[in-house]
Image (cartoon, rainbow over the protein chains, first blue to last red):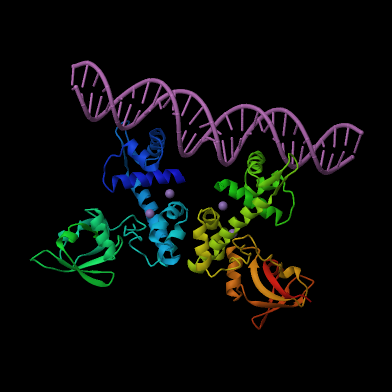
Length: 220
Length: 220
DNA sequence: AATTTAATTTAGACAAAACTAAATATTTGT
DNA sequence: ACAAATATTTAGTTTTGTCTAAATTAAATT
Ligand SMILES: [Mn+2]
Ligand SMILES: [Mn+2]
Ligand SMILES: [Mn+2]
Ligand SMILES: [Mn+2]
């Protein structure tokens, strides 16, 4: 697999987000900042190599072989991201570009040893799950805090309402995407929720709980 | 700079071993396992970019710009080798191939932080010096035991042959890089050498003496 | 259902980096 | 000095991955 082939496979994987979905030529071209005609060429080659299912004008989907290849690249990408943040002290938003290069280094031994060295992490600095060597990983499911039972644990990954007011509230209360959060108690009366976030306990209203997504880690 | 250009620059640097020497097309082709005609093409391109001085049929040498570029790649290569051995527990002879890939990762921040993380090492696991960010490095005054007179004292800093067999021999005989060593006597008949290493006297064959580098403290 | 619009593929071109075979320059040996 | 051997360059191809422009197919609108 060339670097370019790997990036295509990974993009197709991300666009189909684990599903069997058929991905369009234009969607891939947009995502990769390339031209649809280039995508057609590459997709034909990947089809020859049994990495994707492709029929003219009908879009493309990963074969099982392609899916496993994608997961192996995603595994490398996210392990390197952990390395950059945990060991080299990069900020979480600086790592993606470098990991985009490092994910293409060819050495099974390297990635095994890196995994061990990092303590076999299961998520990257953004909270995305890291597939195992065999391509198994905990599929992440994001849900609103208001929809989750007491005791749930997860990582803040998104907002439902992205109004300035809501984002300002998050800033003021030192809540950032990527923060770990646990639900301690829910008040039936008003739907307000006690949470522990970054080792700090606080109470949030139902309006807040209905606007903040948690990524829950469950077995796939 | 493309990956390929970088490998050419680095090869030219190593073949001229720091000197102003003019390097032949065939020497580069041999070293890189490629064809002389490919070298000619690349050398023309590097000349366009002011990385090398080139005149038809007269060989090639690095410009100052080319030399600094080479040193930056060597720096990355050797820092990654330290990382692989010190942090990931690779053996000496396993690191070069992976470092050959890692040296091409583009990120100044990455290599700065890696350098800090490793404790600003000045040599790689084979005892070769690591240039600073500015391209300055201590030119190694290391010599093979077989080339040194009786009475020489020094520190083991590198190996010539990094084969598994040789590294295993060193392990078995508790010889590590950093150990102090003194040459007691040399047998003319077979070139074997008596040494004192870590207050322990032993005799090593000419083959061993020809593969172990000392950094000299006193020469007498 | 016909027409317009959008998506996709094809055809032809290009740049990078490699190759082979042939031409040319340099070096070596007598 | 000159022929033979060797080194180097040139010319022409190949592969990979990209592009533009044109043709074709599919989808959306009237
Ligand atoms: Mn990333
Ligand atoms: Mn990538
Ligand atoms: Mn090396
Ligand atoms: Mn390399």
